[in-house]
Image: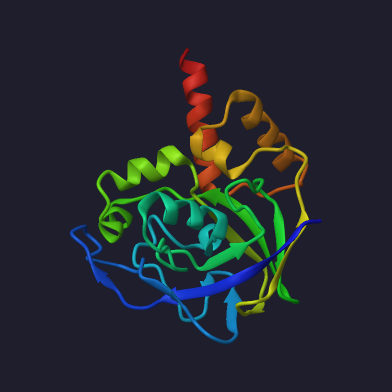
Amino acid sequence: MRTGSLLAVCLVHGLLPTKDATGVTAIDKRPVAGAVQVHPLGLTGDLQASRRHHGGESKAVYAYSKADADFWARELGRDIPPGLFGENLRLAGIDATEALIGERWRIGTDVEMEVTCPRTPCRNFQRRMGVPNWTRRFAEEGRVGAYLRVRRRGSISAGDPVEILSRPAHGVRILDVFRGPDQDQAAALQASAKAGEITLSPEIRKVLRTLSARAAAV
């Protein structure tokens, strides 16, 4: 299986004020040195201000790829350092957006994670970037990165190898789900889950329910 590397591990640097009901956002992530412990709800020392939209076991960790960050650096004419997009992991050699739902990775020697669902850009992301129509532009480009579920806890550090352990046969990518799966892709995900090959996150199940309801209404 393909391998890459972990360029940076990012934790919340400080809470920023927002105008929503939560009042703060933890999107300001920055790289840290040394080993960071990984547990089922994320990384030790990190947090999510709004658990309605972030966090939980199916969104414990957010990963973004260097190739996509480099793309945005060229597009925006500015540096995109690790953590600027609110990601916990900046990866090289692994395309998070092209990862399959249920794909499993090993990071370092102990930690295993499972790809669960795409990131949806929000107003806090818009304010952080300060780019006109940023969330729409980010969504249209489709380089959204992936949320991960922790399958095996342990510790990780910048420089660790990232190995793809397994890829499900259904072939449905993070990008496919973000843009909206078709009926065949939805059926493939459901069949894979029924066979025990993958565990669908609540976010993916919601997408599939919505798709099913639309099909039934036609």
